[in-house]
Length: 326
Ligand code: PBG
Image (cartoon, rainbow, N blue to C red; front, side, top):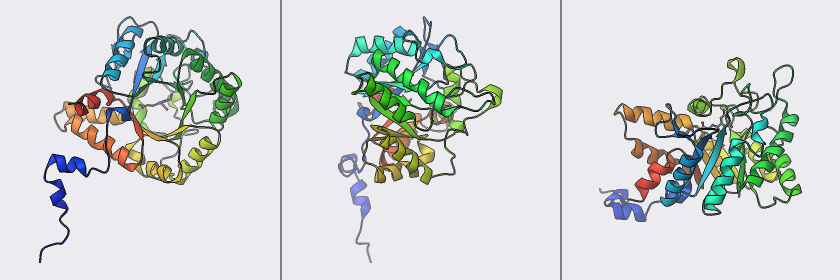
């Protein structure tokens, strides 16, 4: 007459719920994406990402201090250069903004915060693509990965503990690993954006870094098609074979199945990127009073961990680390 199983017993108090929780979320699970603008003397707010800034070197250091003090493990840096060119040479210039910022953070924080550098060309190219173009406007894969190798060396030299290639070129991880090892940077970690889908959710990011793809173009010729699930495993296995230490799935909420697949099939650490559009949607609805930002962010990031991600790159890092520390 009464059900034998009474799952509600285990939900009665918050202490019991915490005891039986299958998934935990803690500040050490977060990496904060940060933007640094060349030549800025004051931080510039990013309108589509409320609470996020294009930082000056000074405000960048302050922000990393704040993140560190609430227990966030790491930061991933995106440089916004003052000038661009066809090949994106600012990306590997030792005096380029990303390298200058990495050096200053390394001097300030040493190994206390995991310093990651996004490794791509799109912020530095006039046409906004993640690689160099052929005459017909298509991205030249093999010419591009040679440039990625140069960027990796510049970032490692400047103090990045982790380089994170995000351009989705074939063979990029192998080219970068080879260059790093050849120059004695055998301890530099590669976090591969392994399964990165062509997504409308990167819109606010492109405002943040001032990237417009030439001719209203897109990245569908190099980033993955949302229709494909098995292909993510092919991509991630290729990256691990080429020497990736950690693999990433991106965006997060639209690819929970992929996170779950990679968790089951691979033994390297796995992370997910909760991207700019995912943050912006929550912030926009919350600004209207329609949802509670912190509650929804906690729910989404817990789901990403439950699907199998070991850690998450998220613009909510500071907000949630503060909340979890209360
Ligand atoms: C490429 C890069 C992008 C993001 C991270 N690295 C943009 C793109 O692929 O167009 C997006 C991150 C986000 O939306 O938060 N350098």
